[in-house]
Image (cartoon, rainbow, N blue to C red; front, top):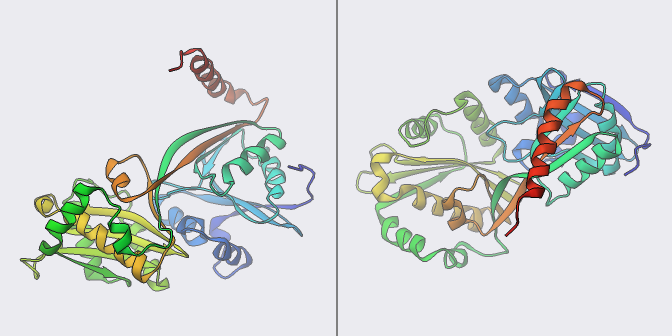
Length: 343
C-alpha cells in the first residue's frame, strides 16, 4: 500500500454533516448495512452520547473514511456500540487512500481501537496494511463471531428441510398454537407491544430505547423495517407474546432484537416468529443473506449455516509514553501464548 498517495484530508464533526450533502450521498451509496450510514452515526450521538468525527482522505482515485470517537484523551475508537454488528471503513475507489488517512490520524491520537471489523470484504486486512504503512504498531486478533445464513437461492421450504430435527419438530408442534405477523411499516401500537414484551423477557433493560425506536421509525419510513409480532392463537385479542426487530439492506436481512414473554415460553413463540420472518425474508424479500449479528449463542447455530470472524485492530503510535502499559500487556500476552504447549 502506497503511503505517498496524494489526498486531501478532512476531520469533520458528525454534527456538522447535513443530510443530502456529498458525504451523506457517499455513505448512502456505499452502505451495505445500517451501520454504514450517516443516520446511524448521528443517532448514536443523539441518543447514546457518542460524539463522533468523520476522518477522511479524498483524491481523484476515490475516497476513504472512518467514523471515530474519543473514548479517552488520545484514544480514538470505532463509532459504534452494542447495537452495531460490525465496523468497517467506507471506501470508494482505491483502498490505498486508507494509508494517508492512517498517517493523518497520528497527530490526533496515540492509540486507535477498532472492534468487530469484518474481513470477508477485506476491511481488516486493508486497515492493518494501512496503519502499518503509516508507521503505527498494529495488533489484529479475532474478537467475536458473526452468524449468517447463506441462502444460496433457496426458498423457505427448502431451507426449512435443512434445520436440525428438534427445531423442525418444535415448529411443527407449535406453529398452529402461535399466530405470527410481519409488519413492514412502523406503527406506534406495535412498537408499544415490542417494548412491553422486552420489559418482561429475559433480556433485561434495553440499552437505549430512544435510539431503537428512532431506528425503527427511520427504517419504516424507508421501507426497510421488518417488525415481527406473535400472539397466542387461543387468545387472538390478547397481548403479543413475542417480538422481533429486523431490517432489510440490499440483499441482506439483519436480525437486530428478539424477545418473548417468559410466561409464554411453553409455546416457543420466539422460534415460530423467527420462522415466519425467515419465510418473509426468503420468499418475499428474496434476500441472499441473513445476518444474526455477533456472540456465540447456541440457538443462532440452529438457524444459521455459516460463521464469520470479527477482528479487533489496535494501532499504537510509536514513541507515545502513555502507550507503554498497553503495549507491555500486549507483548506479555503474546509471549505467554507462544510459551504454552499446543494440543
